[in-house]
Image 1 (cartoon, rainbow over the protein chains, first blue to last red):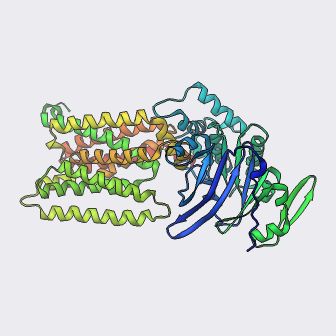
Image 2 (image 1 turned 120 degrees about the horizontal axis):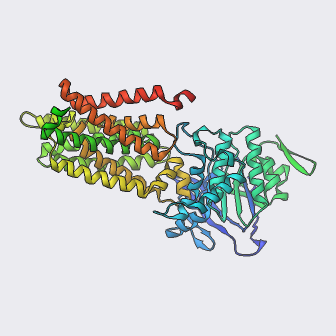
Image 3 (image 1 turned 90 degrees about the vertical axis):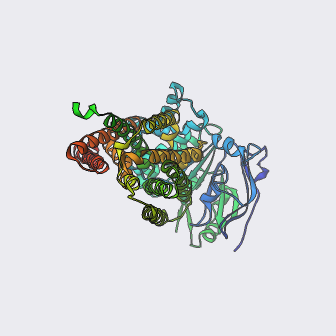
Amino acid sequence: MTNIHRSIDSQGGDPLARLDAMGVHYGKRQILRDVTLSVQRGEFTAIIGPNGAGKSTLLGLFNGMTPHSAGQAFFKGRPVQGRGVHAARLEIAHVFQAADFDHKMPISVLESVLGGMYGKLGLFHRPGEHERQIACESLATVGLLHLADRPIGQLSGGECQRVALARALAQQPALLLLDEPTASLDWQAQRAILDSISALRRCGEMAIIMVTHDLNAVFALADTVIMMREGRIFWQGPAPEAKDEALLSELFSVNISLLTGNGRTAALF
Amino acid sequence: MEDFFTYTFLQRAFLLAFFSGTLCGLMGVFVALWRISLVGMCISHAAFAGALGGLWLGFSPLLGGLGASIAAAGFAGALAERPGFSLDTAMGIIFSVVMSLAMLALGMLPGARTEGLGLIWGNLLTATWTDISCMVVVTLFVVLFICALFKEIQAILCHKRAAEACGIPIRPIYYSTLILMGLVVAFSLKAVGGLLIYSLIITPAATALQLTYSLRNMFVYAALFGALASCLGLYISYFLDIPTGASIVMVASSMLMISMLLSKKQKMQ
């Protein structure tokens, strides 16, 4: 396997988040090894790679959701360990892969979005009008304000995923982690999610790290691409340089062709 | 009805039934929405085994029940958290073990085993003012817990991992809930008995879930249905001269069936 590992630290400035030589073991099995990367403020990073490469595991290193066995994560220069884990989680929002809700779940869409702020609000403090306003603005960003009072269990898979995105936005994070936000959704729902993410991309200082299998979304949205394979970083660099048929074919072990038209690049396999 | 309340022992039984039903109903909301019914079943039967063990070894059944249920809460709760662990199998084994221990303790009891049999079926008519005072304290404690941590409970019920990722301390809340359940079960054994108590935990909550999309209402309804089933079950058992625990569970189950027939949620499914 060719391991093309190129540093992107030359972008300058203190990174918002950094993983330093990190490794993860589940029992005796090594899931991630020697992962070193950094994310700048406002940067959109896409993580791609075949199934089982350790992409979702890597995402959890930033906020301490993945227990690690080697190295150290840093957020705003502080180690993500001990009390640093809680401090990091208040400023890092994490959108997980789509979850099924019981259709009888007695929680509304608005209540679900408000939940994103409860970590910052702290124990024994009730959400007030200010928090409701932020939650409504987050719902408006993902185009679901009209469903604010609907029970969460009555939404489609795509709508649930957009609510998860709104919950993350309500947290007003410095770093947004997206774990396959369009997985198992139909084309229309995927488009709606990607439009919402694209809207976030254009505004603010928030950095975004997205794990995805959708190469077309990577080419459309990302500044930086990290390619994972067999628990290691296989390649990392600027998104335009990731548009390399040989590189992508080697990553996924399948022949991939790239087509360009109307200013967009699409992958075929 | 007037005859019923002229006896002091029946007044005490009625009060104990009321508080047991209220408490079990409240705890059932966690079991139903957190989907920890197997964990709940293990904790409740561990309390039963602990109480019988206490009788056998010559110390208070209440202390035995408390110790066993809290130990089971810690053990089963930790198992339930392990990723990739077959919870069904583990809980099935733990359930069999605690029931075997209960039967062993019952078999080893000397004499007529009246008190031991009372722990199986429940014996409200032997309720003392001390039992009722303990129940009032536990009820206040549980209500305070739910009110103080309502927003965190709501966020965890909605999406446990998202709640953890945004900085909500889910582990202390999760284990406090399991320990509270152990407390409630241990104190309620006298009312319903070890074999049937789990039904009084889960059935009123399941009934409430049919009727509301509000978590706040669900807690209120579950407490009301639990209290109503317990008091009505006691009243019916007195007049028909049937075992109280069985009567309470039959009333609770009838309420669930009626609510399913009337539920708009069922019709929407």
